Length: 120
Image 1 (spheres, helix red, strand yellow):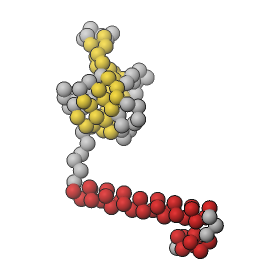
Image 2: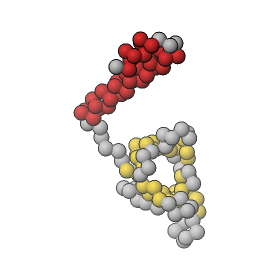
Image 3: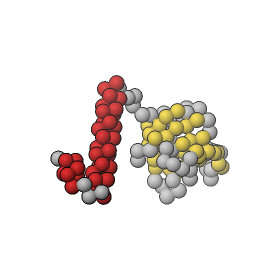
Image 4: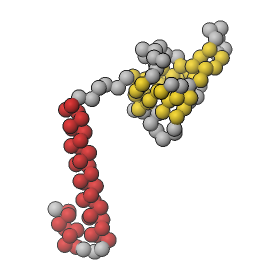
């Protein structure tokens, strides 16, 4: 239960754990947490997406069969200033994308005057 909720890993994935299902936010869908026998005498190990749990509930870490480890951290809370900046940035990006679409359309239609105005 201590793994429930939102996490981020050390390669930038946003991870959501709900029950025994985990969504990495990478388009691969939900993955199931599973238990498997270990070759050590301590019994069972938690497994997820081809990795074995080797961390603690406070500092989750997952190890691949090749030895590579991935750690999880709780995401920091977003401040009101960060939220406002995000909104402004996304608005700017949407406006730039619209300009690029208009420019492309004017170039395809060979509207030289409009293309020149959009480039200024």
